[in-house]
Length: 145
Image 1 (spheres, rainbow, N blue to C red):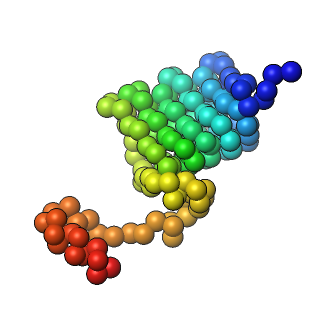
Image 2: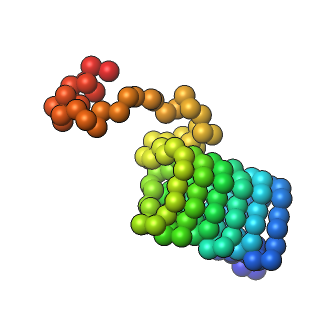
Image 3: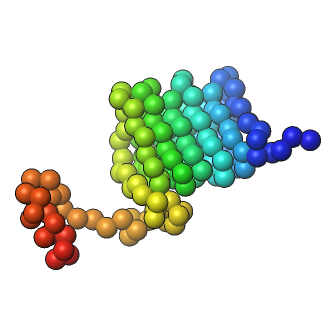
């Protein structure tokens, strides 16, 4: 019997699913999915696919459309064709030129280990932008905080 961790679940291009999906291995969505996804492995939303869901997975690759918050313990990759509307939390984020993203991003190993705190706004410290200050003032402002 094959190892379930190495199997890939495929939702076909002509398939529409609403509900909850969970898996240990990997899944590839070619059609549409609406609901919530919890995965230990990798989720791939293919070009032409749509996913309106809250997603928690090990790794997420987006070629199609996702509307919803995404948490990945390892990495989120937005390819050139990706369209994402929602908040992202991940240890690593890779965004290709041409990708479209609307939402908030929290990246770093400390957030992914905490499971993203289920997109808890209290987990993310809010500070005013410091981009227009000289570097020395930015460092000093950070030291005083």
